[in-house]
Image 1: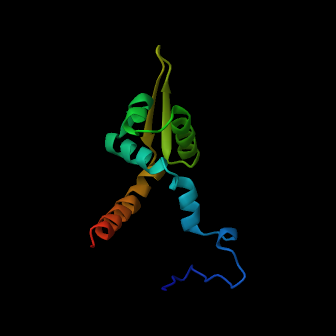
Image 2: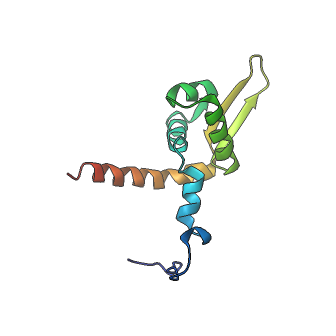
Length: 119
């Protein structure tokens, strides 16, 4: 295993979940079942309305979609814009911080695609 200068191997009696592991932190933020599809659809559209997102993420309940969007907004990855109109209109887009995640997701996609087709 290769370690960078920031990485410190775990002690024998140390639990990975009790450490400040950036990968585990990232997985808590984006690693749930629905969050990556939500991020991909927002990425593809730039700005997307709630109901369109609900139609695109097939199988997600409105409660779970709202929960995921609130968590992604809380993590600083998604921006929610509510317009004071009748009927109400809400749009979601990626924040600057959310946009910085895209190259990592693109790389993960390329890696997974290569692994899936490796034979």
